[in-house]
Image (cartoon, rainbow, N blue to C red):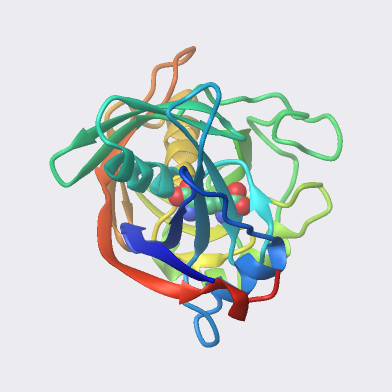
Length: 272
Ligand SMILES: N[C@@H](CCC[C@H](N)C(=O)O)C(=O)O
């Protein structure tokens, strides 16, 4: 059962992308995990399946490297834009997104952020603008902030994100029972009103070179709390994204997307 796939990335956050618009492709959590394995599979942070949709030009499904299916992926959305073409829409579990192709990448309307505790979700009611929580080893300049951009995020504004060992800090926060669906953990440093440095520990994939939804969530948290303004550049280890958001509106994310190569794999070699 030979199957064509595309290896793509957004700022080094890498994907194995299957286009199943013409013929169905069976992806299970076990199969996604096996293909994502960097030693025994193809290797990627997320596996992406593009399928037909009744409500948009296509539907995108996303599996993390651990095999968990999730709602949203900003970097993969830009990759889908360059595959599908300019001016299309994409159905995701996180909402229906508008895609535009730009020179070298894409600009995407990622929808409106949600701030209610049960939309993140958190385990019980609390003010998501200032969580009464702290984790060992992370000194923050403000209380942690939680929000959903289709998927769950916590944002920790820290004095210097590059000084942190996020490999050690990320996992316990991701798995804290306060986040019943686990969480993507953003370690952010505000450099100016228009520039934020960010490193992300992703739920189900660990530390990645970039997280598009993390950049959106962090920019929204910074703008909403008066620390940054719309049009903010978010600098991640893999490169930069520009995030536009006005309170009450939807989030626009603009940045690169790259098709690296197309290949063929034997799907039957991976557990169904
Ligand atoms: N890399 C992504 C986010 C992928 C999903 C995330 N790990 C989750 O579990 O919600 C991005 O670019 O947004």
